[in-house]
Length: 334
Image (cartoon, rainbow, N blue to C red; front, top):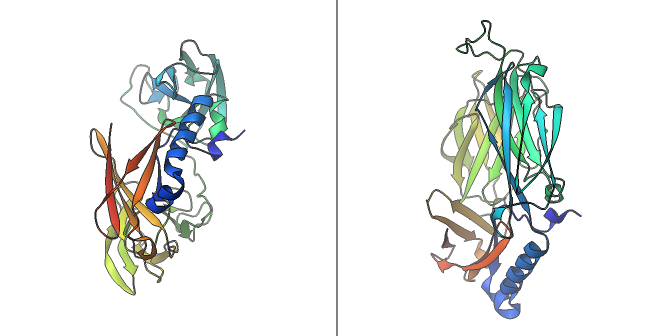
């Protein structure tokens, strides 16, 4: 049973519901009760792996220790007896899988890197079979560099990675535009990630983006955001081919015009904005709170909104305070 298709218990899930609807059928209260019953009946597992180092050489041993938690009582422990830990090589192939017995929510193991000859960026993944009911979003994943063996035994000042693989760029979806061809470093792909999942006409949103070439490698570019028939302002890459900008969408499709490292300028269309709906921005930089703002299209203005806050399967209803006709703000303390 794919439980995760119903509720993503391990993530912060924010759902906006008009107050008028809540007043008529008390939907918010019933949603909270249903989510909490679901978590009590199907408690979720979370796993974290503690590695003994942040980088390795091919002649070393990678030691790990795992901690499993139950979301119904926030304590160390698990429903599963076996933890699967995988080592993935730079080409994306699972080269080793260790099945480890879980006792009191803990287990440990190792990978002998001397078995392999290819240096590069390896990935360590950990999960239980029970966790896969929620899909792969909750699988623990960590990427680590593995350097080639030192030329002189004991001399670890030399850190080299040879034979770096070229990973193909994913095909563009509704959130990505580009002309990237497999293995071609002169073609580019841009993916857009609107905060809250989508754009809404007339509602200000933050949009993250990622620029890669045909080999899947990040690209440093600069350019301008174009909307409403004009230029809104400059856009820059922050790091690793990624950046963010703010936008008030309209019926006119916005475009991102980027100057690439080869000096050529390319234009990429942003996703089409919906005519009606909600948009959310979240500030999680506070030490003890999360603050979010909910914007709404003109046809939804004037309705009081409430937020269903779900974290680790536990739900509660949070009431917004009205900030303006178009937005309302709320915060939640830890």
